[in-house]
Amino acid sequence: MSLPTYFTRLICVCSLLFITPACLAKDATNVIVDTGYIDVHTGPGRGYPVFHALEKGETIELLKQRTDWIKVKTKRGKKGWIHVSDVNKTRGVNGEVVAFSTPGFEQFSNRKFELGFSAGQFENSDSISAYVGWHLNKNIALEAHATQVVGDFSDSSMFTANVVLTPFTNWRITPFVTLGAGTIDISPDATLVSTEDRTNDVLQVGGGIYGYIGRRFVARLQYNNNTLVTDRNENEEINEWRLGITAFF
Image 1: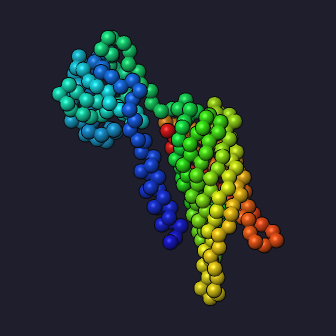
Image 2: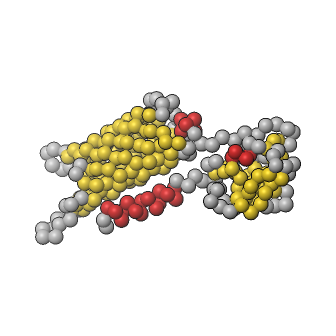
Image 3: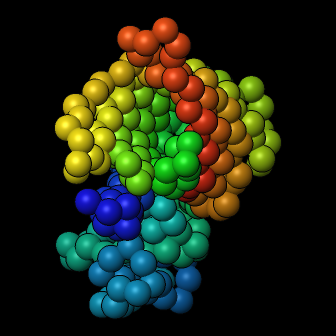
């Protein structure tokens, strides 16, 4: 399979992953509309049609939040989505102020999960990667990476588990270092000579930077030095560069 085909499939998968799952709003409660009217959409986005308008004084229930959209339920049982800025135009049943914020840099600094994909160079071959990460705290995370390499003479699949250290979490351009290990499966593209597929252990040391883009997205530039543990007298070292985009939750 060609690299463009892999890349297309990976983009499709990651596009689904980057749709932030709806989460229960921490302050889910009943609120009262405190403005002239609020448009209610059928889905979490301005591209969805408006099917209802909330009137001033109407009581609604906040159900869950997806990025900067809130799902609500009216007293008559109608359910739809309103923008977070409209929620800020409501008040609590006791008159208290209701405030919701959109995802921002503060959420990036306190993120728990990451999903990302990237494209780059694995020595002299093209590569694409996808990963998922879980943050133990602000400075330490665990990640699992899957990488597909497409070369002129062989194709490879690499899977690694990594520990990532981020010392400066309050910077918008944030450096990190990573240490990991895994395996790589190499399949030579030989037509005239009989060759065998091989599997090697991989030791990985790397580093890079995050660049906060906005909302729930950051750019990620990473360099890895991969050491393939072989049966020969010398191990094989491969340099790798990746550039991609990451969604955080």
